[in-house]
Length: 317
Image 1 (cartoon, helix red, strand yellow):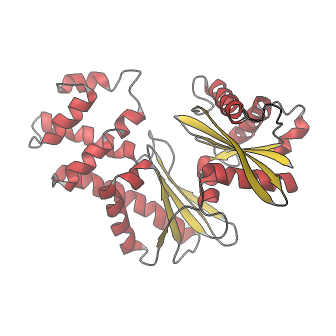
Image 2 (tube, helix red, strand yellow; image 1 turned 90 degrees about the vertical axis):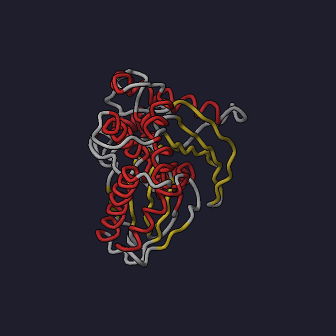
Image 3 (tube, helix red, strand yellow; image 1 turned 60 degrees about the vertical axis):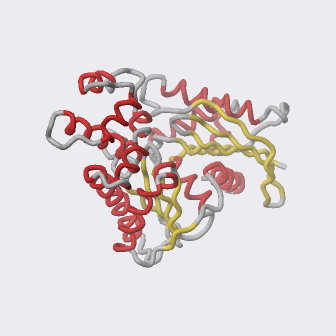
């Protein structure tokens, strides 16, 4: 039996799941966690990737200290499929798992985490995965295996439809309240209290500090959605605008892949935990793709990575 590893490498943490494969069946044998990854070109990008893979794999192997991983697939944040960056990440994975010489490169694959998430959620056939957490990305697959992706170009370029977007817009809204452009609302005080700020000057100073990042903006999203649910017009506009952007991406993927009644599976904290936001997305989607079917994931990104690892053991890429 072969030992396979599937990794889900996000910005906050990395998960590794090990499975033995025999007679076409996967038997889970270990799980482990490690730190998150960043873009390989970011400061310490390669170092963080190596640390994430090595740490999560070591923890997964704790009950199998003599186990030798024979094929591995990583779904990682920031990896664009079919690029030189992907090849670079695969060499790092090969090095992290100590496969030996370059002949082992055909037994590793690093790709975007949206692809492993789609494969885990919808193992076979057509469908669309909608990931809306701190960031967002939508990926679809047709019955003939074609894929199309919308969004996910990073918060600096394309964050609409994510918790970051909701929180970022909400914070901007509070500053317009503070300087008199809009009437004040309890949302302003709620957001500022969560940030530990008592003035617009303090807010301005807080967001440029090194420890304030996209996840801190995303943490404000529940306050914005709750305010929208309570009738705050500015928050309502934010939720509707962000939901419409996400819905537009889903519709575009469906159109490009000619999916008239697509199976749509949603993942990520923004769309699964923020009920008001999810409802807004579904209502907008009902107008653009009335025949869309909302479904539950069959598995997660680690499951998808393991299925892909199983495939590369039986055929070269």
